[in-house]
Every structure is written in structure tokens, then in C-alpha cells.
Amino acid sequence: MELVTPSIGLVFWTSLAFICLLILLRKFAWKPILGAIHEREQSIDEALNKAELAKQEMARLTSQNQDLMQQARAERDEILKEAKTLKDGILNEAKKQAQVEGAKLIEKAKIEIENQKKAALAEVKDQVSTLSLEIAERVLRTQLDDKTKQEALVANLLKDVELN
Image (cartoon, rainbow, N blue to C red; front, side, top):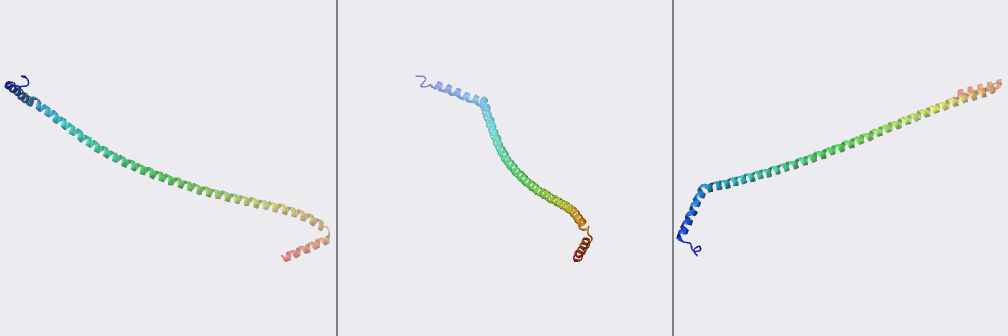
């Protein structure tokens, strides 16, 4: 039972030992412990501040990245639009040039056909005139053998010349 009911001496010496322990702890251990706690608290605050700054920087970079991406998309769209316009212009120009070239070729072909037609007509006329002259020569030889036929022919020719 002595343990359950403490004596005055035990209480005194226990209290004295506790107070000495508190004084020793306060003098030697309390300041370093509080300093370490305070230092830890400051490092945690600094880490939180750095984390907040990093978060803000990350948000700024993300926003800047989104702006750059949007700008790049706009530039890409503009370049694609210009390329399409240029392509359409080149195609239209090529079509026009092909039409002009085709029209020139058709015109050249028409001129060539017309020239060949004229040449063929001239050749036919030449052949017809040659044949006509040969026929006329033969006819005249046969008709001019007789003097009366010659005089009748000259008279006919003079009538034709006077009428024209």
C-alpha cells in the first residue's frame, strides 16, 4: 500500500526532482527544441511559399503556353488559307492559260486547214485550167481547121467581149 498512498517525503523529492528537471530542460533543452521547431516552421513556411510561387509560375506558363498554342493555330489557319488561295489562283491561272493555248491551237489549226483548202483549191483550179486549155486547144484545132469555122468563132468571141 505504500505505493498507492505516497508519503510527504516522496512527494517532496518527486516534486523537487521534477522542478530540477524542468529547470534543466528549460536551460539546456527547451531553447534548442523550440529553435528547431521554429526553424522547421520557417522551412515549412518557405516551402509553402515556394510551392505557391511555383504554382503561380506554372499557371502563368500554362496560360502563356495556351496563348502561344492559340497564336500558332491562328498562324497555321492563316497559312493554310493563304496556301488554298494561292492554289486556287494557280489553278485558275493554269486553266485560263490552257484555254488560251487551246484557243491558239484551234485558231492555228483553222488557219492551217484554210491554207490547205486554199492550196487544194488553187491546185484544182490550176489542174482545171490546164485541162480546160488542153481541151480548148484540141477543140480549137479541130474547129480551126476550117476557115469558115474560124471566122464564126472570132465573131462569137467579139460578141461575148462586147457584152461583158
